[in-house]
Length: 345
Length: 256
Image (cartoon, rainbow over all chains, first blue to last red; front, side, top):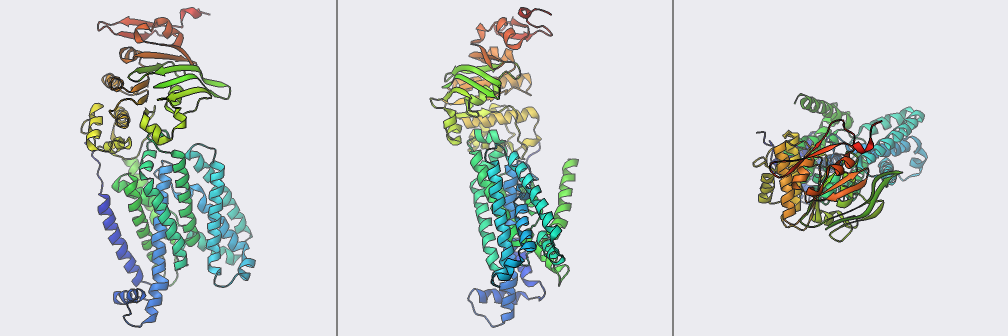
């Protein structure tokens, strides 16, 4: 008899949470300036109001460079992983990813458009606002794309239609991005390239806040709808038969996915594979029930991005690799391994 | 309990259902039979609230199922669709719990009813096609509950099952009716229909040919419905078997 072999979600969450805390501490220590655990603890304590002694340099490194970056990695990773779990339930495809809706492509058009054509606006804007112009443009692009997709999909019935419309919108956005790149100069191309491969290098507390809100909202939607998402795996008709308001669920989930991908793309550019891989792997470990899946995926997604960011800023130090390259280099082989194992089974 | 009054469903100028009227009382088991494409599943979808008729009225316990929200509808009827599409690696017990029977005893009872006792911890995708069908039926029965006074819709519940399991499934449908539920079953096995149904509704080309108790079903009804010759054979048990004759167009049509 083939019984289900699973890891208890609570144990996995505890283990992952411990790993994430350890990773975060390491991420606090390592960088252009290596700090000792004592220096980090002292700086953390000062920031929390316990005035231990007066080494200001450590405070700056910990509180304005490393902690925002860790927080951004945790929240962006969580948002992407939960959005991926939602997308995989919505399409009933265990290898779907949040980018399928086309929202990240829409955000990319806006961001690239701003980088290439936005110079006059940048020249007039106050200096303090300039670093946030691209993220704001990207987020507006994500919102506009979401509105467009939902408007186009309003009369149609299935999730398949929603995804097809998303693919169409993504293709148009891709073409528009290509057109913008065609007219861009070399310097603009470099910043577009860097942005499109993702980076946490721009992390600041003000960027962490919207991503954290997006992650929290997405997680709350997924958690509240967990039982309905389970039923959706039976099929859309069966979900309806068991009492799920499928249209409402689909709308809520699509909005949550759009919010999560929009906020993440705006803050850190396009980071691939996290939304696809994390919920898929976690589902294999603990089973498909969403109440546990979304929580564990959030923790694992956050941890994965902290680790990937640690690699991206240390492996070619003092330069930084775009984090999207790291997640793709790790994620793609894992994905291929999963596919091969499945084919052999 | 369940009623359709002059229900028609059309897609463009294609009529899937044409002026069908049918009532099913609480405690009654009605089989919908007819050739492929006759409109059986469409009628089931209208009665169960999945599909709005183009014209005519469907009602479930006095209200239109299309006016009830999904949750209230789910409390009044359970529905087994034709093809299960579940591929996620739920355990069998988890699949049954999706129907709403949360406590372990109810889940175990539902599993035992379909003859899969003790398989609760197996992974659903590792089951055979027939076993998956029976798990889905257990899920639907768990949603229905033992209370009676609800509606149960089963779309080809015996497909992919061996003869013994086909009887088990029809006995469960019969038991649900005896508990006071109104039960509608789409079925291709006419001999099973003759043995278990209170009435058999014969559909062809979207029209209701007849809706009669099994003992009043004639070879003529079946020939008209299926466009082929049938023999109704009395069995020693007292039941009747319906056997279609190979390559035999009905006599009434003559030969070209």
